[in-house]
Image (cartoon, rainbow, N blue to C red):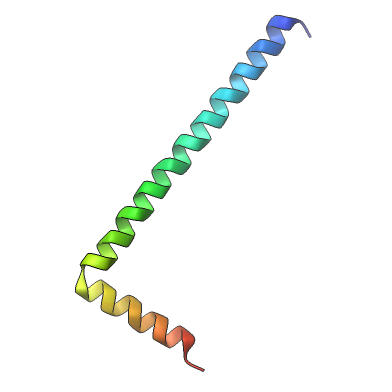
Length: 58
């Protein structure tokens, strides 16, 4: 494999990694938004607390 091929392969790998990081960042932002919604909506907060209580009853 020539130097040019190696450079192109490396560039492709970097692009793929960047796409994966961007996707992970988007998912984290979406999850943060959902958590905030749960915290601000009293009905959702109550439901999640009830689920938590049910899960931890022995």
